[in-house]
Image (spheres, rainbow, N blue to C red):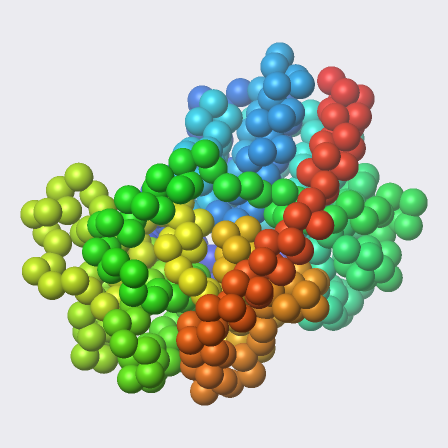
Length: 427
């Protein structure tokens, strides 16, 4: 039935790809890779890592770098599904082969495996695709799922197709979960209990780059905000920007000189968001207009009240400019985004009620006081004002968030030990 459904939706998938390509040029290029066409530059018999987008690619990059040092004789391949993920791979892993992963059509998957012939397949988080895993199983290629997470909502969805899910999970050699709750859900859905283990989240092992302080100072200078209070709304989605701007307009009345960094999840929305800000009556500039080598030629004549982040790979540095963060994807049915980066920067974070993608991490941060949930748009403004007007409370929350990250480190070392042993066996 799954195969029949795939054939029926194939024309729709192709049409949607064309539509997305019109809105986001990143989807308009290299489309053949998504249907199993492998670029000739891809080396055969690699250690294959598959990540879906930017966040997973960033989390996987240190693991890949460590394994490259351990196995210099082996080629490595990282695939993604999104242009943002592709950009992160090219930026962080320039000597690793990269292309888009095939959609889960049988012909695409078979063509990809025939061309690449991977020696092992490492999947990140919840990248579970029946045909992909079945083909690896048929070819006796070990499949590992690392940093695995399975929200209660996703588990219910997989449970509705339990026969397909049970078969798929039985073909995964090992599952390294972020938490015991995720481990329990995988086992309940049919994974072999002997092949599932809790190793923690590798995203806690992120560290500030060596150029962090210097880059933050350059951004502060470019924005020309001086000592003004700054908050950031990170990874926002359609429907959230209006909520963010409403809160910001209320804060302007309470906190003189307050500034906002508004960073849409997808840079292709930058112009749309800028127009929305202009309609709200406050001055706005794109980050790229202020920090690029030719910024002086295009920068606005007045200091903007809102800067819209439109440069990939700079979100961590923008957190360093702010005093408090709102994590997007949480007032819409997306499930929230990663709150670890603002915690690493020592600032408290706020999310809306939709947190199912990061329930455990946000729960850990909330228990120590480093994160709070805004149940309504009105409550978001209240919480932001509380932090911005009370430096002591803000510092206490930021320190607690940073300590929580430090306390949860170590997953990468455990996952690396697992990967090293499996790659050694697969050589």
